[in-house]
Length: 308
Image (tube, rainbow, N blue to C red; front, side, top):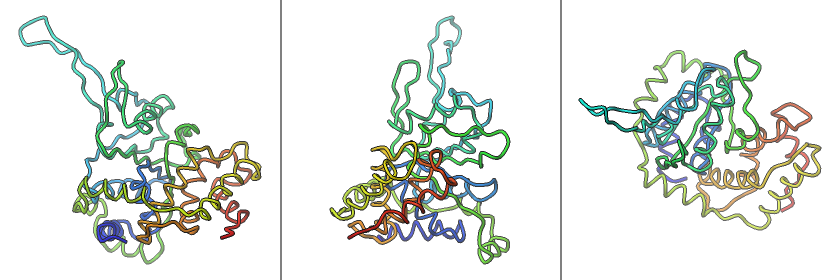
């Protein structure tokens, strides 16, 4: 593991207690140039983790609170006619929305209507937005970290499959263990700590780490294992639909990022694929699964042998 990654993880673990695996997954997601969906009950630290990630990576950060009356223009921006002083003349001037940032926190994204949710589709896929016929590039790097409450809660709109597929990973934080919770109760305000984090990476260093992820080698035997997983989801698992080619690439890129973050390795192991499988696959296949939304990846692991 590189010293820079070690420093990033150390700072994040000081803020979010007892969630080392989730923090590694979140960092892996961003290093793989993906977008992250954090699903959990209110008050579990989703927003704090998002703020901490932006702070420790030294990235510009903005937050949108998604509500049922949110409009696409509230996300993307709008052109407003502005008159010149003392005259009737004027011109339309574009006022960029909060999407024009490096890290965008879409807080409680499933409390907005599908129309508002879909405003992020082009931004997440292309790194740009098209407004009034003009395409405007977004700052780079561009990451969306969305949080959502369980769909069983009132006032939520489930994310459609096309939106879910734009998220490289979905993670859940869960309740802290007793030791972490005691430290939380006795310690400092975690949100204040997140706001005070020092940036450990420059934009150039972050780009270098993202490039290193691309250079992680995958042997033929590991790719065979990955393809057996993909084939199981498509033909043998009994799902209505399996992993798409985009989903297959998401699994590969996520595993490469995990290899770099968890072990500082430049080569891929089957264990790297297994470590990210739930975060990458469950939200893509949950609607098609016969069992619960979080049993999909475990069933795949049980059914598909490594065979190295």
